[in-house]
Length: 287
Image (cartoon, rainbow, N blue to C red; front, side):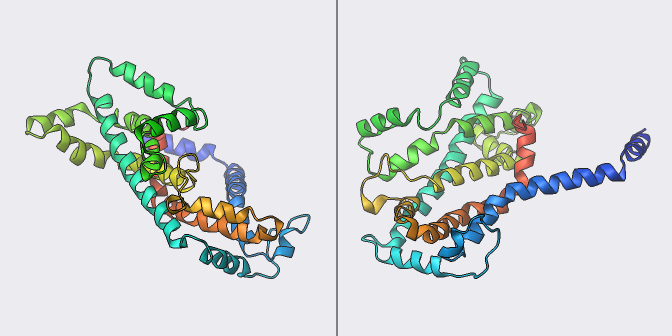
């Protein structure tokens, strides 16, 4: 029966249809990769080529002047450039790891345990997904000011860790896990902590890898200007944005700075991207 189905699918597929689908996928992929390509190309363009109209998708005279000027500007900053790099790396790592762990811990009881208010809590999480960052910026600032966390690392870490998207994603992915497997672990004497860490987390590895991509990208590109005023605590995107604000003469430097900021999220995504499609297929977020 399976062979007949496979044979029918092969007969229904035409060479022309396969070619059209392939061409369409290539065009869509090229269109989506165009911004990344332009970011790389513009970073190596001299200033006179950047303003050519219509813009060119290649470099006639590649140069590293933009990067040299960027490093010269960062070396003359009041605070060492390495301090900004440390702030961004530290906050990004802490937020990514903390968000994945806390979201997974909160999602496990919501997905695999029934308790009073279970559905209400999840409805609250779904409602939280509707609010954008700008909508909750003022309440976040009031709370941080009340707790005395303004102008500290905590003002950058705590709001990013408590994200409803991560909890929703992990909960949706944990629900299909068979209850029989968890019950067998309980019968063998495993605690809830051990079940969550040694059984559930390995099964949902694609989900928390995808969540780590979202968290990494979000916090790496954040400036934190709403909460941070001390120069020693500012993040890398902040100082690079200040350098870019120098006018037309710094357009090339701005392109180089954009490429520098782009590299870490892209590398992180390339390492973990094989798990993204599997996660989306199971979480109900394909559309």
